[in-house]
Length: 409
Image (cartoon, rainbow, N blue to C red; front, side, top):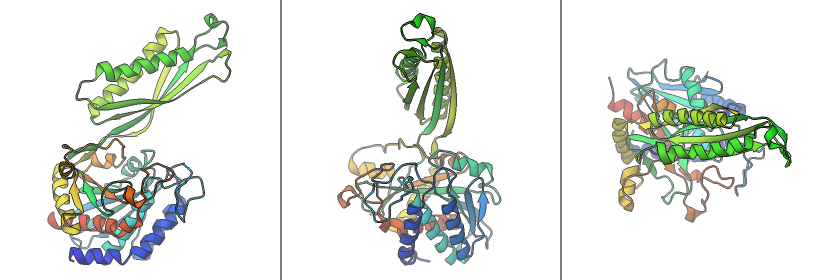
């Protein structure tokens, strides 16, 4: 199989890929509640000759190859959308109050295209390709759920990769950027602070304990973590996103509630900040005769790209797409004169996989601002160029097959 033949074969699927993507786009689900998508993906896989298996709450796993002894390479596509109303100027909008504003409908479609390619070339696969269709990426729970359910086992996965489409990049559609070795996306943690005070009339504050005042001091205190407790090289962001208390102007409420996020590129820094959030919130509340309880919700670790996998997959991309459409992040930045490649500030729960097996992340340019793709991910008007679908499924399939061939037992 030549790279040209593979790209041409993938291109022959384009009309079908567009139909698939538009069905998924108009039937979005969020979190683990993605039954229409699950049913569609399973039926498509069965029609290709696969025997898809459920994994965890809403995940799907299918295996390609298995005819030759060898290693196992996992490719992952996420399936969930966001709880937001679509405003994009497309002829196939979602109307159920949910939206594929992060492009996961594109990922699922490309995975199904890759599945078709892999099935057509199953006799050439030097080992096994495991296809991971994942729910609940947006809430950072789907990958962990599937790992707990055994997605990396039976057969054991040796390496893994993912693709994320990116709208609004100033690069030709279909250009693929591979991450360099090391951390490329931060850990994310969501936290909630519940403050218990003592309510009273606003004219008699001495009779109560004001949780609003406590919340204000906690907000100020938490900013001191970054200002005075982290070193120059410790990259981290702590944001308070919500503060809620009371419902009357002349009443001091009993309670106040806050929530926020922490983003870090280092696991030790992550653990330190989480510890200090709890200590500072509790200490300040105690000083003002209140109590504060800190709880952590869903989150994910840092996404780590394996250095060896980063090197070889960058070569595979150039073989497939040519040097004008395949770049490493550092090479792209060097060309633009910006020096070291920046890390993404958006977290990605494929990070859980990357903590378990050698992994790599690719970014696929899916529309330039000049072509009308002006809005970023998670914007209600974001659009993605469907022309990249066939190239995306070829990248999934070729990377997996090429790695298995190069790493035969």
